[in-house]
Image 1 (tube, rainbow, N blue to C red):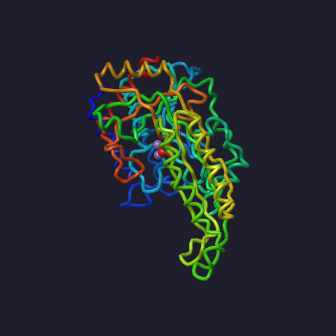
Image 2 (cartoon, rainbow, N blue to C red):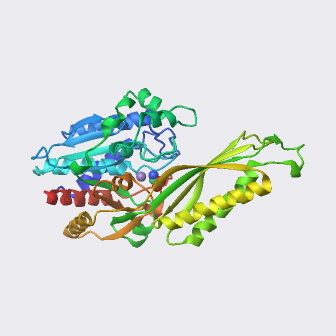
Image 3 (tube, helix red, strand yellow):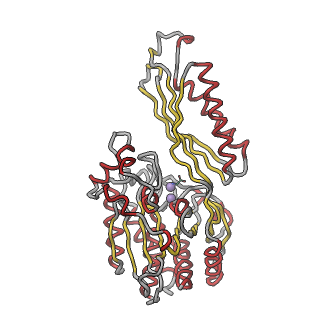
Length: 412
Ligand code: HGY
Ligand code: MN
Ligand code: MN
């Protein structure tokens, strides 16, 4: 196998090129689905795949596929990938590091002339984050055949463009979204290399994290409907202030999560105020509750408390509410046999590793509902992610490339 530094150097070149494809230069990486920056990343990824001899195509979800045929064309496919979209002012590693690592895995297998029985297919997925349209896993949902054309037309960004129209604008055909569906029975496994996005590995000096469980995730969009009015001339007992009512509810959420414990987390990261004028009492707010736990019941408790609190605030303030479920993914469990294989490969190279739960969700989370799936983490410096300060070591990513290449070679 090539020496580690050769792979680390390739990864550095990829990531230093890709991090430039951002709409917020100087303020982290922002690469939203179907944006100019997404187009630059798609073109780069496709070109790199073709340079190592993969057959490439782009599917209707905007995902880039690169395929290396095996010796048995009908053998089930090994899928490996992650996402090329980012959050706003995010880091240069979340998602994209898994794609370039997959490209380096394919390079190693090719350059070492590993005769692969199983075809290997890299998938650079689109809109895993879900911050533009409110629904995450755009590509992985398409791979599992879970989109309808109607839904693509109904979901839109804050400027009013639907996913359907964005796909058209990107030069793809949204009417072919159902063609993205994979035959889950003909998939050997789905593998995702990803940064930990948490403090565990870095704080303990451990090189690799073998994910055994991904926390369940539920997201709800809440609208609170009051009455816009003049901030100065409206007496306090005649107000129906949507922001005031929202704060009465949102300020309880952290305590609810702490009370549930067991790693349960909850936050409101997105909030819009209407009309959002400094001298006007707000008539409406729209915010999203993001709640996660490896124990679904704990999330349910929080959702029940939310509904009770909204009712209580409505009776006191007259501010009404609407709750709309956006995302509901149960806790995802990784494939035990593949984890054992991965563990063996870590031992082959003498890399330190530990089993780890993922608090963040990933394409692997949804894929694990239908195919044997594993995830391999590399440490995040100081556990920081979704931030311009996000960083990981290229050598750690190279170790993940080695381990996955070795595991895949042994799957033969
Ligand atoms: O939200 C998440 O956990 C991931 O970053 N999409
Ligand atoms: Mn992310
Ligand atoms: Mn990610």
